[in-house]
Amino acid sequence: MSPIRYPLVETFHSLQGEGTWTGASAFFIRLGGCDVGCPWCDTKESWPLNHHREEAIASLLIAAQAAQPAFVVITGGEPLMHDLQPLTTALQGANLRVHLETSGAYPLSGAFDWITLSPKRFKPPQPGIYAQADELKVVVQNATDLAWAEAQATQVAPTMPAYLQPEWHSPESQGLIVDYVRDHPRWRLGLQTHKLLGVR
Image (cartoon, rainbow, N blue to C red; front, top):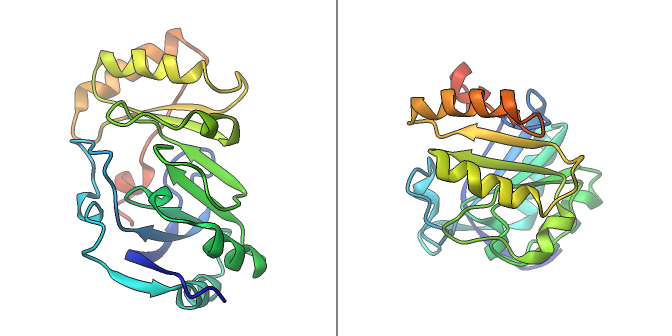
């Protein structure tokens, strides 16, 4: 197995709280490192690249297998700051489905069964990621973010699931999205159901 080690913020077994796979059993691998810099990020502790313990792929694989989830989610931070090919090879070699949550700001590495692209204005996606994504998720804080979302939607297939997600600390964004989705059926309202339920 590859000797590569990854800066690990945490692993945990819960339910996927967002997007198409909401409600499914998921084992999360949260990697450290992110320079996208979203001011409203709810996992800023993941930003430092070198402040987290390094974990071997074998240990991550053992933990994922023990959870017996519907799939494993590799998230961050921005996980594509790392070469994910060795990790995804190990996970898929153990017959685990592997999902990725990314801003797309770095080139894609690894093989995935599902890719959630959540593009950010602060550091836009690499052009090649759009064709690889399976769903689009845009966090909305104000009307400017809606314009950004529309620009992003032109880069993906019109049949791709596309979500507008309220920024958690901005109650006004909820009403903004509800009104917008009502008039723009291309979009769906995306909720962070794990936060509503009070689970990880």
